Image (cartoon, rainbow, N blue to C red; front, side, top):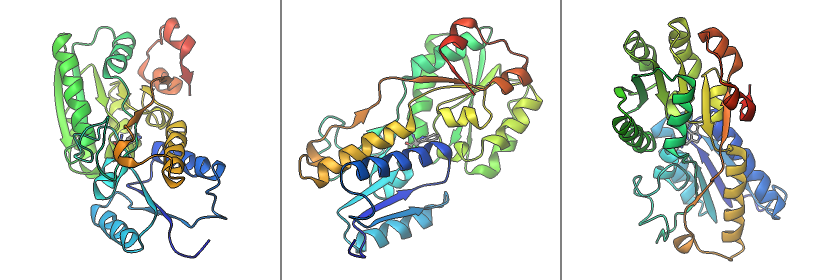
Length: 287
Ligand code: TRP
């Protein structure tokens, strides 16, 4: 290693899914000959703070790295990578032909499949809560899809947004008695504070359905999710192809993962007094 940054990795916040993706990214690079013994990889975490993010990215850019891996939409908007919707985040011209120096792998899981899972777990539901952070465009696109689904299927949506983790408790409390379950997309702010949400929802027996596996491991009832370690590996493979000069970002389509895992938190099901239908329990990863 030369002592200068060759690959900069910037992650918006510490939470399980992003940590997994990060690990997958580094492992894939290593397998492709870009291990820490060969290239200088610098890891930075913005701890959920936008101004940290800016500082990190400008420091990276000043060092002219070969590549920056940005983990999650807010990080990618400050720099460039593993995010939900690249076009809405204005990072690419279109997903098929990005057209600039940004490409990557998306964690978007089909909304229909997520809502169908929720419908099987809580079949009597008529009112659904939705919580996300107003400044995350990744969440906004998922929220819009969720609302479309609910409209089509005759479900009423109670939508709430937070500015930061400090609003979670109050927003959750505002949904007590109003909803049959709450849906939380892959929102970086909520994902970093699932236990705060669960304290209110569990005490009031409101099931919480989430967009990412680790959020269910952290206490939520269920998720239908991509595998974030594999997503990170896929991103690392793409980065290695770029470093090898095999592909160029502008002509490398945004990649997606097509197979999902269902994760059910058994302990939370018990707290809620909910029986998991056999058909789901059979194929789910029970945590
Ligand atoms: N999809 C998020 C984004 O585009 C990032 C993300 C990945 C995430 N895994 C997650 C967010 C799990 C919350 C929970 O920014």
